Length: 346
Image 1: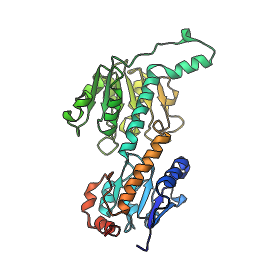
Image 2: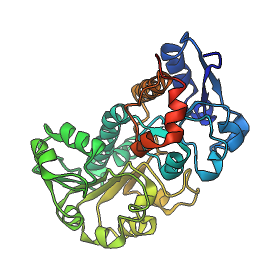
Image 3: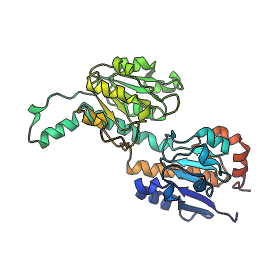
Image 4: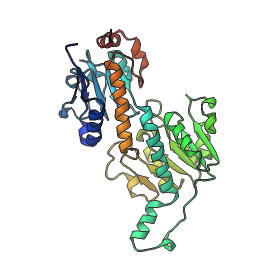
């Protein structure tokens, strides 16, 4: 075709992950005939605009917001390729209506996020931050106000048991946990039996687990899913970890649970608003470890996210259906079929 396939890269890649982005593009997309890769307009910020989208066949999206108003000129756009698995900033119904497929990168994400969960768990169980502060202050182990705990013999619970949740349980197999519990309305027991996971209800997960990790997507059904009553069900010796999305948890309830010692502690990588305000009450507590939504950000994660996103875009460019598609209903949309047909090879 005379008109090249144009792939736009959202501006936040160049402010948050430039080195990884440029490395992936160089390794996977350089020299591909008829492909033009270029930065999207920096003034777009993290909110896609019709003017920004209308010139592209596909875009790479990091934390880009794409909704109905931004798709009013999407006659050309075929694919929004997320580097990652969360897509709470993307309106999938609007994409489907506009004939645009959303793709994600589940294979690249699951292991780094599982490792991030255990990083927080080990740090909490061994009082890592407290130990560091004691040693730096010239004190020694006799000055520690409390001892750590072992993971072995405890119960690990998960809210959600999809791609990442199952990887978490897979990693946990050799750590000596007594039980694995999970709640997920979209998973059947036979799907997780090989991991020794017991599917149960959400109250049981919170009541009986020593560690509760959040491993579910943020959508209309999961906003505020974890409430005060769930924290009240937890053991006073139990810990809570969230590496998924902040709005899944009622933030005030989490703060209250930590302040009043309903639970032993928490590891929090995500917040309701990101970045959170400087006066977020979690920052004043010593029984919580916080991180800037980057616990899973490793060189390997960014590389593999990029490679998987490239595979999705290259499939589209070849006129094929992408393997990482989310809104598969779009495949039957005549708008999508017409746009994809431009790239089908004879």
